Length: 143
Ligand code: DQA
Image (cartoon, rainbow, N blue to C red; front, top):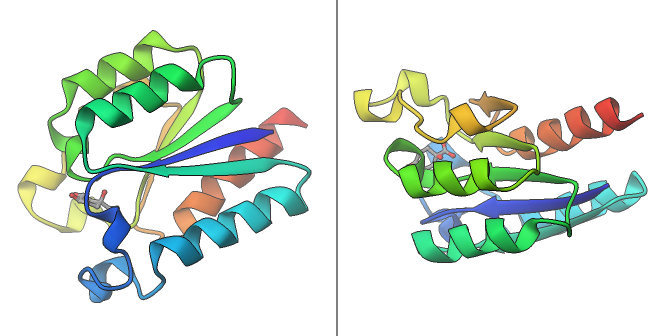
């Protein structure tokens, strides 16, 4: 399968950003590990990260016809980006939303995802393993 892994704002700072919540692995290491996991499963994973809503929307549009599945952590956009919700609805690529932390144990504003309704499902609270768990789901469903 061809995976596109999208990470939203502040996730480029993984490793240094609140490591007690988001872990100690940095973004580059995470992407390397996800690419290796994909290749061990006869698949590819490309990683895209942006702090800009429009750039994420452009990446979702450009994914049409080029990827089989999207795994996305929209970061704080999760909680208010109707534009990302609409972009996901506009393309015919299944998406799983991933949150590293258990958003339901945190501040009230993190409890609501406006983007999840356009996704197959949501994984949260499994730490950085959540991205791999999402890939495992899609691989399992494609066989
Ligand atoms: C997050 C949770 C969001 O509330 C937060 O804004 C993030 C990261 C997570 O992965 O747990 O940036 O999506």
